[in-house]
Amino acid sequence: MTKLLVLFAVSVFACTVQAADVAGDAPRLTFSKTFVGSVPPYFVVTISPDGSATYNESDDPDNSETLHLELAAAKQAFEFAERLDHFKRPLEAGLKIANMGQKTLRWERGSDKSEAKYNYSTIEDAKTLGDMFERIGDSTRLILDLRRALKHDRLGVNDSVLRIQAAWENRKLLLTDDILPLLDQVAMNDVYIHMARERAARMADAIRVSREK
Image (cartoon, rainbow, N blue to C red; front, top):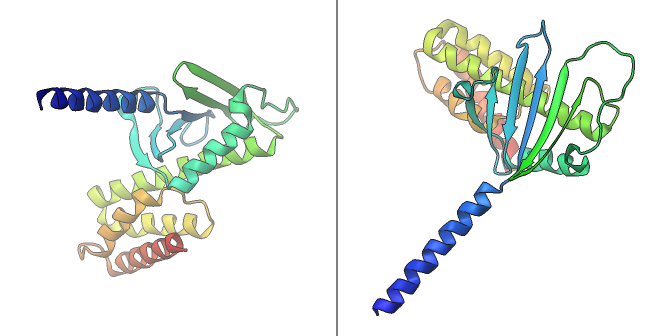
């Protein structure tokens, strides 16, 4: 019996180590953009295959916001990265066009790292992936705006929900996993004006219906 218990304990430990190794080798995609004069002038987004993500407007990791993408969006981003050979080839078009912001796409998996910088690319997969990260950034800022309004500006909550609604209707909203709890908080709390509660409830219902399709 003692021998069996020892073997079982060793087996559990081995599985735990193996799982940790797998987690440690999980790939990550990072997109950063620097564009002086825009708002914000810099931001960086990092995502994992399970949808976990971070957003930061500085290089200080302590300022990162933790987010969660829908799995379908995360999967799509990694598929684009694979089609782009994990950014091991140039993405820059090299055309004489206006400055559109210095962008960097980076792939990491353990010690395997590769990245490409560009101002403008004519490669459709790169344009689509870059646009996806831009939408993640826009969606995150909407989330942060609503969070601030909920804490410090009750009258501004309706405007924040309006901006989220506009992004949703224009198909620019990606972070619904983080937005739904906030919309529910607005809809179910009578400290906010009726218009905001009603709009938030409709938005939350629309998002849930879309995820059931």
